[in-house]
Amino acid sequence: MPKKLFKKYMPDSQKLKQQKGLQFLGDRLHEPNLWHLSRRSVSLAFAVGLFVAWIPTLGQMAIAAVMAFYFRANLPISVALVWVTNPLTMPPMFYFAYYIGLLLLGNDAPGNDFEFNLESILSSLSGIGGPFLFGCLVLGIISSLIGYFGIRLYWKYHISKQWSMRNR
Image (cartoon, rainbow, N blue to C red; front, side, top):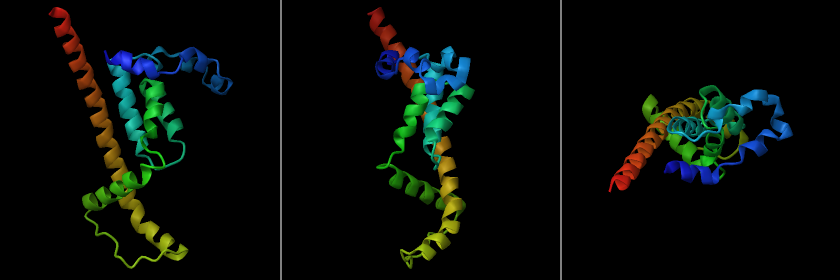
């Protein structure tokens, strides 16, 4: 069952509840849906984590935790999936987001006359920001939908496979 796969890598909820740094959350941290491994909570966690992974800001883990609280998704999975964007994957992912933003907005790519100095970088940021953020939004929505429905389909497939094996 997919539950066994996820449970193997889950942190101990009791240890996390005793962390002094997390006491400000109060009883919200004891919400069962934040720790429960069900098709609903795990698929929502994938949607939250993959969406937040495309947000180009510091504090992605905190944003994912707040969204997991709000949507009652599995907290550890939501926060862990944010690490899809890490120092190795960020440059290609964000360049792809910028490229998608350019395509969808119908903008032309900047010319090859770019010079690597402070003035050139600051002047090009105004033209890069819109397509980049729009591309991040679009890819965040698409990847969260794929994650949500992909986990739901995988979970359903795995359960039906278990039932067919049991019936044999």
